[in-house]
Length: 321
Ligand SMILES: Nc1ncnc2c1ncn2[C@@H]1O[C@H](COP(=O)(O)OP(=O)(O)OP(=O)(O)O)[C@@H](O)[C@H]1O
Ligand SMILES: [Mg+2]
Image (cartoon, rainbow, N blue to C red; front, side, top):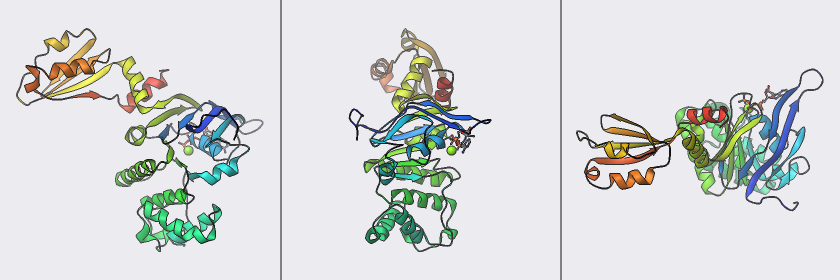
C-alpha cells in the first residue's frame, strides 16, 4: 500500500472516467467520478437506468479497466492490485445466476472454490453463509426449486463466502417483493453491525432512505452529490426550509400566534389535529421549548421534524443543488 491514502475510506475514486467503444460509437459512461465510501458505512449509489452504476462497480472490483483516473478499494489500486481487491470484496453482480440443477450448497461450494477458499473450509463457509441469509434448511434443495427472493438471498450468501470486509451489491432488490426486500434490508443492517462496509446501487430512492448511512446520486456518469444521509437532508432543508409537524390532542385548539411570530416561519398549516410549520431556519429547539410550556404542554402530543422526501432531494440536486 502506498502512503497518503485515507485509511478511513473503503473506496476512494479520483476523476474516474470510462468511455466505451472505439471509433464511431463512443459512450462516456463515467465522466470524472470522485467518490468516497467511508469504512463501516452502508453507502447507497442511487442513479436512474444507464447512469453508470454497474460500470463504476465493475471498475471497483477489477472486472473493467478505467479509461482514465484512479480508484482505490481497501487501499489497493484497481488497475494494479485487483487480485488483492477480489480477495477482500464480496460482489453480488447485476442479474447473478446459479446452476439450477445443483443444490444451494453445491453451488456455494463450487463458487467458494473459484473464490480461492481452501478446500478444507469450503463446505463450512458455505453453510455459514447459508445460515447468515436464512437458507440453511434449504441447503440441499436444488436452486431450480427456489423463488426469486430465495435466489437473491443465495446471491448474498455467495458474496459472503470469503468473509469479505467490503460487500458490493448491484441493484440487489430488483424483482424482489416487498417482504423479500425488507428481509434483505435487515440482512444488510446485520452485516453492517458485524462491521462490514456495504456499497449498494439502486434506482429506488426510498431504499436509500431506509438503510443507508451515506449516499451518492449519480446521473449521466457524474456524481451530483455525496455525503451522509443527514448531510443530504440538511442541505435540502437549508435551501427549501425546515418542516415540523406538531400533533395536538383530538378536539383541542392550538393557539398559533406565538409560532407565527417566530421571524423565520414562512408557513403554518393546520388540519384536524395536526399543525405543520415551515421555517427558513432550524427552529427545532425554539419549538421544543414552546410546546413544553403552558398552555401548549397539555395540548401537544408530539413535535417532529419532517425530513424532505427522496423525490424532493433528487429534484433539488438534479437542479444543481
Ligand atoms: N459494454 C458496454 N458497451 C457500450 N456501452 C455500454 C456498455 N455497458 C454500459 N454501456 C453504456 O454505459 C452507460 C452506463 O451503463 P451502466 O450499465 O453502467 O448503467 P447503470 O446505472 O448500471 O444502469 P441500470 O440501472 O440500467 O443497470 C449506458 O449509457 C450504457 O448504455
Ligand atoms: Mg446496472
